[in-house]
Length: 222
Length: 221
Image (cartoon, rainbow over all chains, first blue to last red; front, side, top):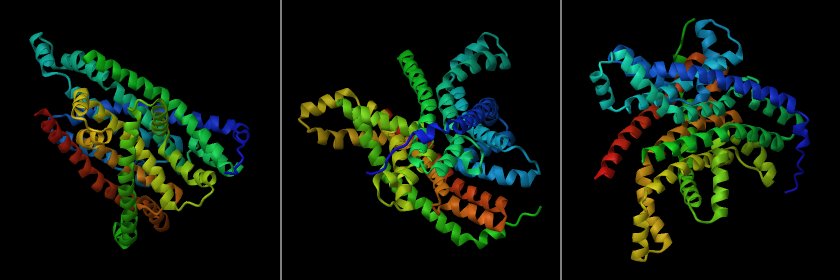
């Protein structure tokens, strides 16, 4: 191959990439805040006794889980302003789209770990004279949250990666800045490689932490 | 504002062509990706340090970066690196196959772990060659255990395939976005496109749940 690499062209333009990374992190953190809280609420609602509550929530969760994230984002950016006549900033829209998507995935994680709380523990709660609310607060919640941490972290980092999709609707995140830079400098290889490495540098440590947590749990369980 | 879903019916041929492209791309990549994933899982559990190192770096890198970045890299950089022209379809297939290979290698690895040490010893005792051991003892069990997760990987791949629209491949997403831009009717068109994706992915995720139940029962005997 005769291509001569010039990574200096990327390093001369670290400013825009850094700005992009900040937007990406902002999107990730805010979407995770929505995902963690709304996800738990959705998990409780989807286990409700009343079908009138359960079914719409189930439909919401399944719809977000079974359609591509890119169409959710494009749909949000085109249709929400037209349908509801609201005009939000593009970063806010990105946060909402990513946050709702993450909430649907987190709801499933919470639900699985809530259902994994052994029946006997709840019976013990009854025997000890705890009320229904106290049982949720002191028995279900702590072990459900602890059990779902690895999946929640994996989903959170998944949102960090999915956030690159907002570049398609021109939110100026890391991916968008990388795309612009690649076109301006005619250096796609160097630029996209650096961008990929930046994403990797953030995701990899988190996935290692998840792996560690899972190994520790297996060791504790056996 | 009035909604007019009849507009979508007018463009059904174009949407069907896009859907066909999406399905074709997904099926080809599932096929190649599963083979690649199984080989990678074997490489990651091998005793050879080089093989293990290379496959680990590959899998971690592809799981640790956005698919969109991988796609852009392969569309814009791979032709420069290799010095050859790649068709849109070829680049799409390469990108999604590499992604599918990385995620399903993790699935196979977990399934391989479940094949007990004793069975390996039994293979040695029976005098089976390493190849026979892999194809007739390890593979069938690994595939059985991995099947539900593999199917859910396929659903993920089906959803991720919509990304190829960003590099101009005429899949369902791309066709949908084009129609929505040309007719200025994003609500109707994009909603229908989303529903088409949903109509395919949702039954498959239900199938994953059913399959998990069946396999758990089968393995419990």
